[in-house]
Length: 123
Image (cartoon, rainbow, N blue to C red; front, side):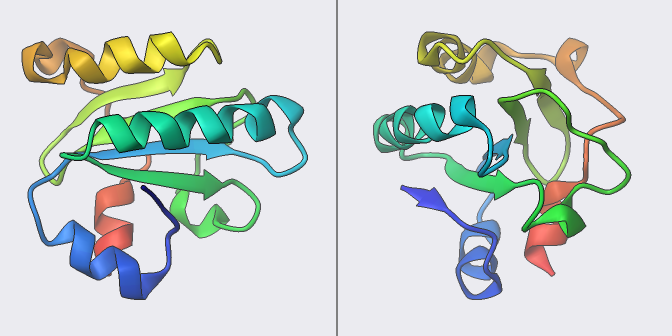
């Protein structure tokens, strides 16, 4: 299931120690529109994670000072660290491979420039 950053949904999902897997996209982007259904399918296969679809124009308050210009941009983060933040190929196999490797990722993948989405969603 893909969550939207609505406070009533977010508070309950962020209280756990699950990873957030967020896709930053835009409604006007054709690639994003095509990717959304695939992103939803992946969310159904990885139920141990919280998936968010973040529209960069509607939900711009979540981006900090980041200027996202390429899509899809993926963020994988828990309340302690960011494991992945960057643009990926829109072939859903790439996202599936990244998610499948979450347990083996180490601090090498951490990014300090990623939006602090976890903190914003929990407020």
